[in-house]
Length: 133
Image (cartoon, rainbow, N blue to C red; front, side):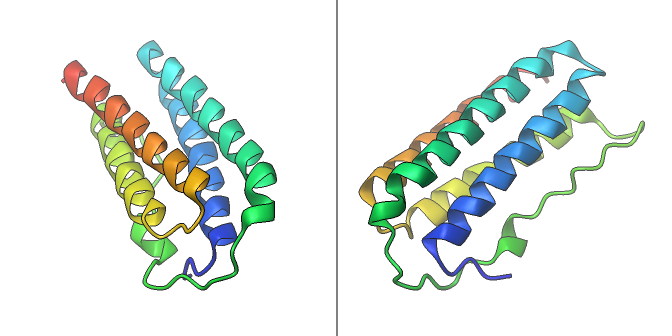
């Protein structure tokens, strides 16, 4: 599925943060240091939902091309054999790429800034995860 509008990108971002929250809650049941990651994902999702309401008047219907949701898909399933830390680093890497690439395509200044900020937050999350290794 192509991400051809600002609304589609924003909806994908909200779904991504919801999935992050669920993922980290699941991992948090196995390792408590991941609980804070779930809380921060919930905060980011709330910010995006609020932004969707605030930025809706500025939505531009100009089509966006060359972005595909499949480029940012993540396997959220954890098995007993899955290394939760390695999975979390991969999840953050994909989120960084999503926010960096999609943010560059958004023609709304506040939204573009928000996506840059979200990319930085995921960079910080990844650095924290890598410090656990």
